[in-house]
Length: 342
Image 1 (spheres, rainbow, N blue to C red):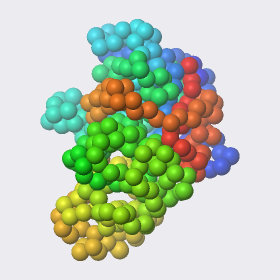
Image 2: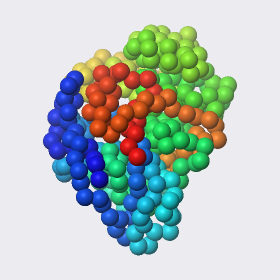
Image 3: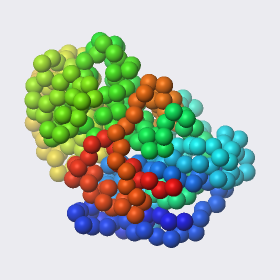
Image 4: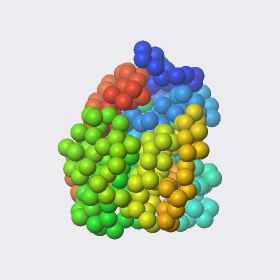
């Protein structure tokens, strides 16, 4: 099979090729596993963190990619969830212990044994992919392979983030950063909170215009003052300054939900500017989002199909994964980038 292989940690820069197109032996499913013929795989900011060493794989080489869609072509012993020919999706969560209190409560994302697709096990930048059967999800027929891929991570993590906001219909929501996840959260909020106003904070004029086209009530820069204080804000940026700006724009009792796997270390000095009366007083809250649980992926796929939530997608061939990653890093992005493989 063909696969894009990460062999060493390296910066993702213009003209660089951190991933190598390789010919590998087809994997075989073990007990409790399935093998899928991958048709599409979304490109995520987390791949940049893996390749550049901020969340490095425990071993190299590694096949990245954690938003994969494909057909089951083989099943291992003991598999009951899937049959050959089923169309399934695979997200960031690849495995958990299954026995701890967190797993039993449906929060496998918080399990100490959490393992990630494309980081701890080989992922979807490949023609074939081996997956633990309980961590593959049926893809509703209303979703194309290209549409489903970004929903498996960007959509699922946005779904979890919105739930953690605890908003009631009619309360105001803010979104800081407007990439692959936030453009899906906006559509989700329009469906689940039809009377709520949505305010978007984004650096580029193109992102702000995109947000307005998708139905945002207001769009401005992170430093801009919205017309109202907000009841909850979801931050999807890798920087610290938007955190301070968001806290200042929360209403009393508001909640900031940080949907980011990391924050830039060089930007930490920004936190020294935190002023308790201005940023945190009046019972404001900060909550982080850690990964996704299985229910997030499964529920959001079904919800997206019913509610008509669809990502805007730009397609790339598997061999062009490096170009897609560079464009993602340099913010040449509108919606989501997806590799077309099968």
